[in-house]
Image (cartoon, rainbow, N blue to C red; front, side, top):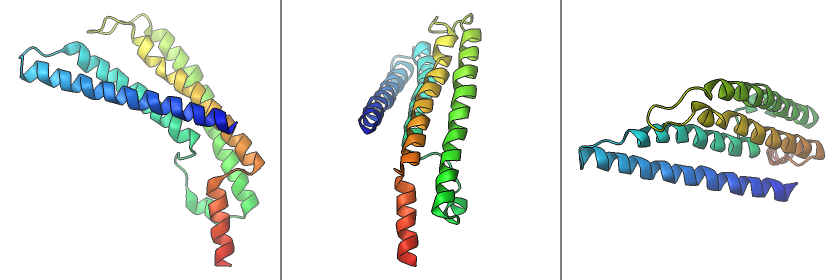
Length: 170
């Protein structure tokens, strides 16, 4: 399980980083065509905006995999370790439900609806770019399941650090 998670992190890191570098190159290209050649490139601007969504969602998947998503540590730190584990599992279940219902199912429906629309500059179906939502949903679902399994097995760096601090304070 740990090897699979590391491989998934590596692939997503490469995809997020690579797409970010491509976005930077496209923006530089766009600036050069606009200010040096006085002939702005409309397709690069449109592509960068869609790539930004994909890059952001790849990054969100990585954050989910590393359990770096939003939480309220004040509440979790005040409860006993067994309740802390239950709250962490509950948090992952909420992420799992969000990923399945909103990102996978809702994202698929939005992508399906947008397949009939074409982008203005690229001439590509808009649904292709919206397909980032179900792809991210699938990845976040995989990460949430892995995180739940790790929490059940007792593998949780956050809880381990908090428990060590509790023992040290006592």
